Amino acid sequence: MTYAQTLDWMFAQLPMYQQKGKTAFNGKLNGIKGLTQHLGNPHKNFKSIHVAGTNGKGSSSHMLASILQEAGYCVGLYTSPHLKDFRERIRLNGKPVSKKFVIDFIADNKLFFEQNKLSFFEMTVGMAFSFFEEKKVDIAVIEVGLGGRLDSTNIIVPEVSLITNIGMDHMDMLGDTLEKIAFEKAGIIKENTPVVVSEFQSEIASVFKEVSDAKNAKLIFADKKEHPQYETSLLGNYQQKNIRGVIETLKLLKRFQINKDHITNGLQKVQENTGILGRWQILGHDPKIICDTAHNKEGLSLVLDQLDTEIFEVLHLVLGFVKDKDLSNILPLLPKKAEYYFCKPSIPRGLDANLLAQQAENHTLKSSIYDSVKAALAAAKEKAHKDDLIFVGGSNFTVAEVL
Image (cartoon, rainbow, N blue to C red; front, top):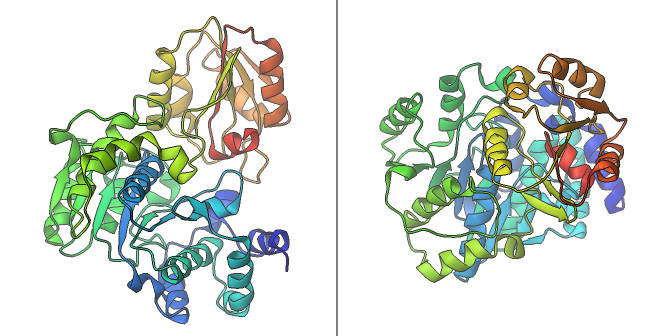
């Protein structure tokens, strides 16, 4: 199969959470354990950092990788979802896994995948682990896909675990309270393995303390520590919360030599070193166009706070969500004084723009409806003046379509 045919087979034959939602989530580790055994347990042959959380885990993972690269280490990076190309998920020193590796891995293991009915995510995690083993990485930064306790990545025994902000997201699978969601995220805490929590949240701090105590794992709340001020190339004031967690995580890495210059340079060169996309990314000027993948109440609150610091005449918001998003927590956050362009991301999980507009009417949001993300953005560009600001977001998939 060609690379395109390989991806078509992966996406079409096996359920993928990002496309289909809850029906693609099995919440078990049997599949990935069987696959890694079949592959020779590659995850046992490299060191790792495990990163979970509702918001900030992607940015934190890329920061960690960038700093470790600046320190001269060979660094693997596994993240999800991808925005433009599947290969964004698996990187070596910022470079995506080769098309040949993807093709060969699927071809070599296709029969096993089919016989064991493995999910898209399980085989992608297995691919990443095999790639990192083959390339003999010094360390791999592994981002959790969904939750933590039952996520396919949660078979690794990392050097350090990092848990970022906890918010109300994926409640149909992780629970309907912050405490329940925090418990699922805390599932990545391992015996005698230190864990850093980026942000102290009083209502759930006890969850992390109970789990870490039971596992004899050293627990550090990063924002309770004093840190020097660092700047990062990732735009958005909210990144300071992620930086604190990253710095404390690096302090706990044993046998890795990382100094202040590595941290400074790594944080300043995150995009250059890792290829990260969609975090407060500027797409154009006159009018200024910004996109961000924040897609839940907590993440969008931070983004809206950042928008308040921008200078513009009129704010234009191009928004598209997925069906399982709890809009009752999101729509009240959105500013009344803005032009809204509602659209449906081009995936099965995409929320119909008409339904979005109907709910938005209850919050007196002035909106227009469009058949696609590209049509919505084109309309915003046509209407906006050069001193206005256009923001694109609401979902990873909305942002993916404009990149």
